[in-house]
Amino acid sequence: MKHDYSIAVKGIIVREDQVLVLHRSPAEMKASFLNKREKWDLPGGGLHYNERCEEGLRREITEETSLQIEILRPFSTYDVLKSFVHLCIITYLCRYEAGDVVLSKEHDKYHWMNRQQILESTLPRWMRYQLLEALDAVQTEKRNKDRQV
Image (cartoon, rainbow, N blue to C red; front, top):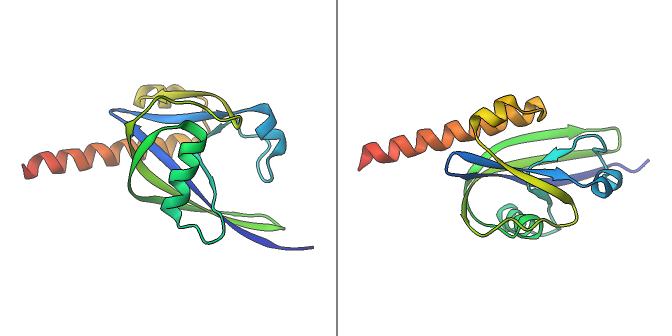
């Protein structure tokens, strides 16, 4: 059996006090290589060979949402280890800059969610945790920036 290695990039896009989550379309879930069950996702996807992480993230976010974003910094890394593949996922903290969400065929709906909506949601636990942590990080950075002025 062939073993493979892949790198994916995801973005937690923050707009004011909200973050963007995408709902995967039935066709996307059926075609998924690794995850046929999870309905919710962050924008992003696999890197092309010789593509830098931030370039790939911008490409994926444009393809999936049509949004313009500012990439703030790497936020987390996660490994998916299966018998046939090792997938490394790098998630970046991003700030919304402009545009209206226009979904690709990979997703059929989206939500901008605030802290309370995240806490009350049925999103997977790992996603709720990451989204809340991202909102905290942005608020902390904003407070620190305001103190410096």
